[in-house]
Image (cartoon, rainbow, N blue to C red; front, side, top):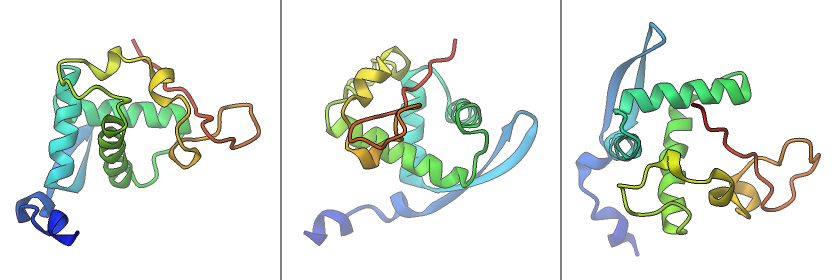
Length: 137
């Protein structure tokens, strides 16, 4: 079992820090190279560079939650979610299909309860209940 994981190229788990300007404020984000690669793939699907994607994710996170918290961890989870949703055939493997073109409700429908927030106004954390993603114009 371990060979599957230990055969990863050491460069993929080496960390890299990037300086990113979010609305005029420069901040540093430190992630492992594999996360940067996945974020780049996500951004390219919608015609964005990784910095543009990060800014969009930041803005939508602030809009949805009012605060950011540990943004580097959020980016790691976003990359893992993307790959998990692909593995579960919720997001197409075809990188020519933009993420923004997908029906978020369909992608998120009936996910395991530990993958998503309870639906707004439900007052419960019923399995599969999710907060729909809002698409911004």
